[in-house]
Image (tube, rainbow, N blue to C red; front, side, top):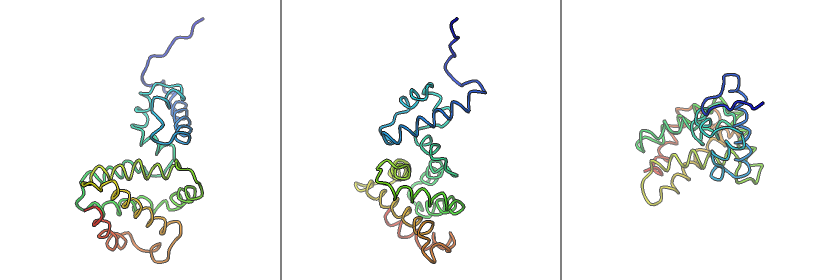
Length: 195
């Protein structure tokens, strides 16, 4: 007896959890082996045994799939895209405020991501992929000039460095400082790099 083939598209309701899990497992494996750029949605779908359109259905795009594999309490892709949507004017203040508001409540998760990344020599570590392929790539879209790529990397390093001092190292006054104080004192320096 031949098994009836399912048509392309959305899976049956009972299949959706299994399908999501299969996609996430395949994506974790491919991101670890090939990195963000080397892993394709088509090859992830093939490994998961699903149609590539299901990845878009469940996760949107490859950046969102990467975030989903990390099981983060916030979606940095959505956060950074909303920050850069208004362009470079006031970007530093929006970036810092959004970052701090998102991560202050989840200090331990951020700390774990950083400690895991720093304790590894893996150039494809999820935190590095997130920094490169979400934060730097999004900043690069709004910065102008021949040195925009370098400036985007410098901004990302400043924000991640500040967060590392605040959440991981727990550097004195920075750890206890209010979001408003950090933004007020730090945003002007970041805005100079943006401009």
